[in-house]
Image (tube, rainbow, N blue to C red; front, side, top):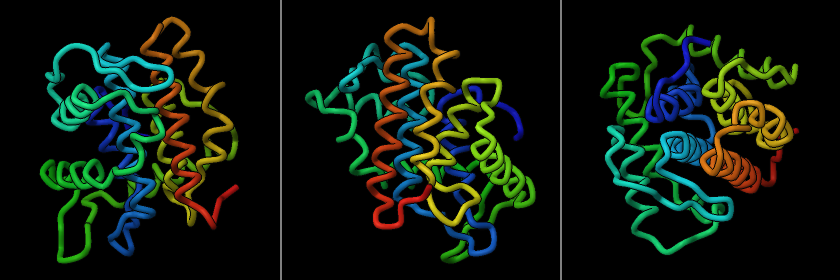
Length: 211
């Protein structure tokens, strides 16, 4: 896969980008994609010290990370009464739509009527295949950013006919732990956010649960 996203918005956009079916010009499993995008934003907020919480997310500091998508989520957490992680994955269309708009604004996608056109579909297909291969081989990438990308993109079904949240969840603990041993409460929030997202994807995938 190409590079490691350097900030949350880039991770969220990569997670979204790998959901596109380049032939049909549509996102595979859009609700699961929204869940994955939100989880990516949560993990970056945790990594930047703006979010903690094992049982529910808690916003810290100001909503000024420099990422419009992450700042919007941070403000939402700060302005809402504490709610369990799972409740944050019920309404995620806005996250998916914001990521889609950002990819179009960045020039990676363009909109043609009801279709989305990837300007580099070959690379996207190769990255989707790589996600599938790593999960099938249970081979964790080297960096935390790529671990998160593979787990979340695999969960929403990148390059596959169906979402694969169960497989991603089985690997999440062992793949994340080496990167988060010294991350303190932010690491706890990352694990909680990813696990809750994969559970939400699994529930959304019923009745065609994969693997």
